[in-house]
Length: 415
Image (cartoon, rainbow, N blue to C red; front, side):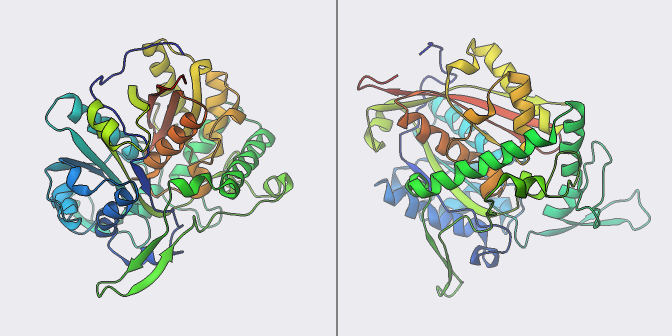
């Protein structure tokens, strides 16, 4: 394995100290009926307890979400109060990049020496999202009422693309993918082949049980402690048995179909970042070392979200001196199949060799925790291969992206 210095040499991710809920689609589970922040916080001891890590081991908390929630003003301090171990910390959001950005920021806390065991908690609920009323003195109505999820998806203030076309199902996000597909002259047949392949990857992962190692069934309780339901699957995943099913779907925009895009969902994920010594103590497998090598962000031309991740990765590879051939695992947040085909073209990479155990295009996109789950799946895959570099990347909002490389080493003789 080609050697390169880690971005934060003092920060390590203890193997296995991670996990989260399955991602049920919008309004398909009892998660739609509860306070997602409190649920995520109260689920944290459950997840870490399965890894034999009591929350009392944490000395700081970095949390992330994108959809406003009750008492969000109090951020991470409220969340740690909910799981019974009052910690200092902060809360951040960066659209769909949030789930990776929280890990980068947690590593910086450890590197700075101010904290030694940092919890990372990412969550979001797209079901029953908040509605806000904002003063807008430039309009005749003097106010704007915004449904946080749907109105932000339907309007990009950087481009002026707005509205929801009831006839076609098009939003500004779909328009981003369609514009990018036209720019790169994508072939619809290739896009549908990729989408079908991604579904088969996910189905294979489900059958093998690999996802059961990181996703836990969770009971959902109401305010009285009564059971509302149980989340034990990625509810809402479509069933495709043949490529012809994809090819028969109507294009909502150029190369964008129902099966070639993700869906709104709910969920949470937690992991740890700590020092080398504490990582060995807390890890499920102390012989495994995991570090963040580097991260990069990139902003494309307004409205070309689907191409932005490829250029964040190019910048990252140029900076580290690594190449796609050096990557053991390649995983991304791909709201559209278009993203992956564009990435493959720009990086000259075989799109078959990505997302081996699934991706958000299939299992859903709760925003905040999406890339955290992607990180964990990528790291688990890299460990199963004996180590190496894991590349994780994804788009955010209308034209931004984030990418990172993690290094996995097995001291027993692996890479």
